[in-house]
Length: 230
Image (cartoon, rainbow, N blue to C red):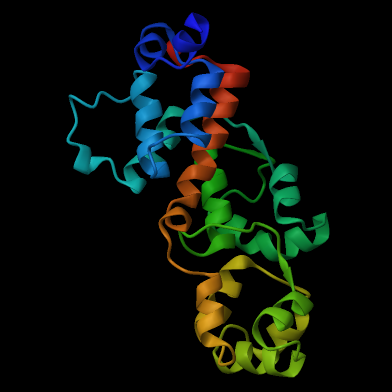
Protein backbone atom coordinates (compact mmCIF):
# COMPACT_ATOMS: atom_id res chain seq x y z
CA UNK A 1 0.00 0.00 0.00
CA UNK A 2 2.87 2.38 0.74
CA UNK A 3 4.19 1.81 -2.78
CA UNK A 4 0.77 2.57 -4.28
CA UNK A 5 0.47 5.71 -2.20
CA UNK A 6 3.81 6.92 -3.50
CA UNK A 7 2.87 6.11 -7.10
CA UNK A 8 -0.31 8.20 -6.91
CA UNK A 9 0.93 10.90 -4.54
CA UNK A 10 1.10 14.29 -6.36
CA UNK A 11 3.86 15.53 -4.04
CA UNK A 12 6.03 12.48 -4.73
CA UNK A 13 5.51 12.83 -8.47
CA UNK A 14 6.32 16.53 -8.41
CA UNK A 15 9.53 15.90 -6.45
CA UNK A 16 10.82 12.90 -8.40
CA UNK A 17 9.28 13.28 -11.84
CA UNK A 18 5.94 11.99 -13.03
CA UNK A 19 5.63 8.23 -13.37
CA UNK A 20 3.57 6.53 -16.05
CA UNK A 21 0.86 5.24 -13.72
CA UNK A 22 0.24 8.65 -12.19
CA UNK A 23 -0.12 10.15 -15.67
CA UNK A 24 -2.61 7.47 -16.74
CA UNK A 25 -4.53 7.92 -13.50
CA UNK A 26 -4.91 11.63 -14.14
CA UNK A 27 -5.92 11.30 -17.79
CA UNK A 28 -8.21 8.28 -17.49
CA UNK A 29 -9.61 8.23 -13.97
CA UNK A 30 -9.36 11.66 -12.38
CA UNK A 31 -11.82 13.80 -10.45
CA UNK A 32 -10.70 16.65 -12.70
CA UNK A 33 -13.50 16.61 -15.27
CA UNK A 34 -12.12 19.00 -17.88
CA UNK A 35 -9.42 17.61 -20.14
CA UNK A 36 -7.97 21.10 -20.36
CA UNK A 37 -7.57 21.24 -16.57
CA UNK A 38 -5.97 17.78 -16.58
CA UNK A 39 -3.40 18.95 -19.10
CA UNK A 40 -2.60 22.02 -16.98
CA UNK A 41 -2.20 19.79 -13.94
CA UNK A 42 0.16 17.40 -15.74
CA UNK A 43 2.33 20.30 -16.91
CA UNK A 44 2.34 21.66 -13.37
CA UNK A 45 3.45 18.32 -11.91
CA UNK A 46 6.20 18.15 -14.54
CA UNK A 47 7.49 21.63 -13.56
CA UNK A 48 6.69 22.97 -17.01
CA UNK A 49 4.02 25.43 -15.85
CA UNK A 50 4.27 27.25 -12.54
CA UNK A 51 0.69 27.89 -11.46
CA UNK A 52 1.90 30.42 -8.90
CA UNK A 53 3.65 32.49 -11.53
CA UNK A 54 0.93 32.71 -14.17
CA UNK A 55 -2.62 33.99 -14.18
CA UNK A 56 -4.68 30.86 -14.75
CA UNK A 57 -7.10 32.80 -16.95
CA UNK A 58 -4.24 32.90 -19.47
CA UNK A 59 -4.13 29.10 -19.68
CA UNK A 60 -6.53 28.86 -22.59
CA UNK A 61 -6.75 26.04 -25.11
CA UNK A 62 -4.82 28.14 -27.61
CA UNK A 63 -2.11 28.96 -25.04
CA UNK A 64 -1.67 25.27 -24.17
CA UNK A 65 -1.55 24.22 -27.80
CA UNK A 66 1.10 26.86 -28.58
CA UNK A 67 2.96 25.75 -25.45
CA UNK A 68 3.11 22.19 -26.79
CA UNK A 69 4.37 23.51 -30.14
CA UNK A 70 7.11 25.45 -28.35
CA UNK A 71 8.17 22.45 -26.24
CA UNK A 72 8.51 20.31 -29.38
CA UNK A 73 9.93 23.05 -31.60
CA UNK A 74 12.44 21.80 -34.16
CA UNK A 75 11.69 18.12 -33.48
CA UNK A 76 10.49 16.43 -36.69
CA UNK A 77 8.78 13.29 -35.42
CA UNK A 78 5.64 12.63 -37.49
CA UNK A 79 6.04 11.03 -40.90
CA UNK A 80 3.84 11.82 -43.86
CA UNK A 81 2.95 8.14 -44.08
CA UNK A 82 1.61 8.24 -40.53
CA UNK A 83 -0.68 11.14 -41.39
CA UNK A 84 -1.83 9.23 -44.45
CA UNK A 85 -2.73 6.22 -42.31
CA UNK A 86 -4.53 8.46 -39.84
CA UNK A 87 -6.81 9.75 -42.59
CA UNK A 88 -7.26 6.23 -44.05
CA UNK A 89 -6.35 7.38 -47.56
CA UNK A 90 -4.03 5.62 -49.98
CA UNK A 91 -1.02 7.52 -51.31
CA UNK A 92 -2.61 8.77 -54.55
CA UNK A 93 -5.84 9.86 -52.88
CA UNK A 94 -3.95 11.55 -50.05
CA UNK A 95 -1.88 13.52 -52.55
CA UNK A 96 -5.00 14.54 -54.47
CA UNK A 97 -6.59 15.93 -51.31
CA UNK A 98 -3.55 17.42 -49.58
CA UNK A 99 -1.05 18.53 -52.25
CA UNK A 100 -2.50 22.02 -52.75
CA UNK A 101 -2.70 22.60 -49.01
CA UNK A 102 0.87 21.38 -48.45
CA UNK A 103 2.08 23.75 -51.15
CA UNK A 104 0.15 26.62 -49.57
CA UNK A 105 1.81 26.11 -46.17
CA UNK A 106 5.23 25.43 -47.76
CA UNK A 107 5.46 21.79 -46.66
CA UNK A 108 4.96 20.09 -50.03
CA UNK A 109 8.41 18.52 -50.34
CA UNK A 110 8.67 17.45 -46.73
CA UNK A 111 8.31 13.84 -45.60
CA UNK A 112 8.51 14.30 -41.82
CA UNK A 113 6.99 17.06 -39.72
CA UNK A 114 7.05 18.75 -36.34
CA UNK A 115 3.97 18.63 -34.10
CA UNK A 116 3.07 22.21 -35.10
CA UNK A 117 3.39 21.41 -38.80
CA UNK A 118 1.22 18.32 -38.32
CA UNK A 119 -1.39 20.53 -36.70
CA UNK A 120 -1.32 22.85 -39.72
CA UNK A 121 -1.86 19.87 -42.02
CA UNK A 122 -4.67 18.28 -40.05
CA UNK A 123 -6.44 21.56 -39.27
CA UNK A 124 -7.21 21.79 -42.98
CA UNK A 125 -8.67 18.28 -42.79
CA UNK A 126 -10.79 18.96 -39.69
CA UNK A 127 -11.85 22.53 -40.50
CA UNK A 128 -12.21 23.77 -36.92
CA UNK A 129 -11.20 22.95 -33.35
CA UNK A 130 -13.88 20.29 -32.84
CA UNK A 131 -11.72 17.38 -33.87
CA UNK A 132 -13.18 13.92 -33.90
CA UNK A 133 -12.97 11.24 -36.55
CA UNK A 134 -9.85 11.44 -38.71
CA UNK A 135 -10.81 9.00 -41.46
CA UNK A 136 -12.40 10.27 -44.64
CA UNK A 137 -16.11 9.53 -45.12
CA UNK A 138 -17.64 7.70 -48.07
CA UNK A 139 -20.74 9.04 -49.79
CA UNK A 140 -22.60 5.93 -48.71
CA UNK A 141 -21.88 6.77 -45.05
CA UNK A 142 -23.00 10.36 -45.53
CA UNK A 143 -26.19 9.42 -47.33
CA UNK A 144 -27.05 7.06 -44.47
CA UNK A 145 -26.24 9.75 -41.91
CA UNK A 146 -27.98 12.73 -43.46
CA UNK A 147 -30.43 11.85 -46.25
CA UNK A 148 -31.89 8.48 -45.29
CA UNK A 149 -29.68 6.73 -47.83
CA UNK A 150 -30.70 8.97 -50.74
CA UNK A 151 -27.62 9.82 -52.85
CA UNK A 152 -29.46 12.38 -54.99
CA UNK A 153 -30.52 14.37 -51.96
CA UNK A 154 -26.97 14.22 -50.60
CA UNK A 155 -25.67 15.68 -53.87
CA UNK A 156 -28.33 18.41 -53.79
CA UNK A 157 -27.46 19.30 -50.18
CA UNK A 158 -23.75 19.58 -50.89
CA UNK A 159 -24.03 21.41 -54.21
CA UNK A 160 -26.90 23.77 -53.37
CA UNK A 161 -25.23 24.76 -50.09
CA UNK A 162 -21.97 25.54 -51.95
CA UNK A 163 -19.96 22.90 -50.14
CA UNK A 164 -18.87 21.62 -53.56
CA UNK A 165 -19.44 22.55 -57.16
CA UNK A 166 -21.17 19.85 -59.16
CA UNK A 167 -17.86 18.85 -60.76
CA UNK A 168 -16.07 18.70 -57.41
CA UNK A 169 -18.80 16.57 -55.86
CA UNK A 170 -18.70 13.93 -58.58
CA UNK A 171 -14.89 13.90 -58.66
CA UNK A 172 -14.62 13.15 -54.93
CA UNK A 173 -15.05 9.60 -53.73
CA UNK A 174 -14.18 10.53 -50.16
CA UNK A 175 -15.22 13.53 -48.09
CA UNK A 176 -12.99 15.14 -45.47
CA UNK A 177 -14.37 15.72 -41.94
CA UNK A 178 -14.28 19.51 -42.44
CA UNK A 179 -16.86 19.20 -45.22
CA UNK A 180 -18.95 16.71 -43.26
CA UNK A 181 -19.34 19.33 -40.52
CA UNK A 182 -20.70 21.71 -43.15
CA UNK A 183 -23.20 19.06 -44.23
CA UNK A 184 -24.34 18.64 -40.62
CA UNK A 185 -25.00 22.38 -40.41
CA UNK A 186 -26.79 22.66 -43.75
CA UNK A 187 -28.58 19.34 -44.34
CA UNK A 188 -32.34 19.83 -44.60
CA UNK A 189 -33.35 16.32 -43.54
CA UNK A 190 -33.09 15.28 -39.90
CA UNK A 191 -31.66 18.69 -38.93
CA UNK A 192 -31.94 18.16 -35.18
CA UNK A 193 -30.50 14.65 -35.39
CA UNK A 194 -27.56 15.90 -37.46
CA UNK A 195 -26.69 18.67 -35.05
CA UNK A 196 -26.81 16.25 -32.14
CA UNK A 197 -24.16 14.15 -33.88
CA UNK A 198 -21.78 17.11 -34.11
CA UNK A 199 -22.71 19.06 -31.02
CA UNK A 200 -20.57 21.59 -29.22
CA UNK A 201 -19.79 19.65 -26.05
CA UNK A 202 -16.71 20.55 -23.99
CA UNK A 203 -14.74 17.45 -24.98
CA UNK A 204 -15.12 18.06 -28.71
CA UNK A 205 -14.07 21.68 -28.30
CA UNK A 206 -10.66 20.70 -26.97
CA UNK A 207 -10.09 17.47 -28.82
CA UNK A 208 -7.36 18.97 -31.05
CA UNK A 209 -5.53 20.04 -27.89
CA UNK A 210 -6.00 16.59 -26.36
CA UNK A 211 -4.77 14.91 -29.56
CA UNK A 212 -1.48 16.80 -29.62
CA UNK A 213 -0.99 16.69 -25.87
CA UNK A 214 -1.22 12.90 -25.87
CA UNK A 215 1.16 12.67 -28.81
CA UNK A 216 3.67 15.06 -27.27
CA UNK A 217 3.60 13.50 -23.84
CA UNK A 218 3.83 9.89 -25.06
CA UNK A 219 6.60 10.60 -27.57
CA UNK A 220 8.82 12.98 -25.66
CA UNK A 221 8.25 11.66 -22.15
CA UNK A 222 7.62 7.94 -22.44
CA UNK A 223 9.69 7.15 -25.50
CA UNK A 224 12.32 9.82 -26.09
CA UNK A 225 13.11 12.53 -23.59
CA UNK A 226 12.33 12.92 -19.91
CA UNK A 227 10.85 16.34 -19.15
CA UNK A 228 13.52 16.86 -16.47
CA UNK A 229 16.20 16.89 -19.18
CA UNK A 230 14.58 19.51 -21.37
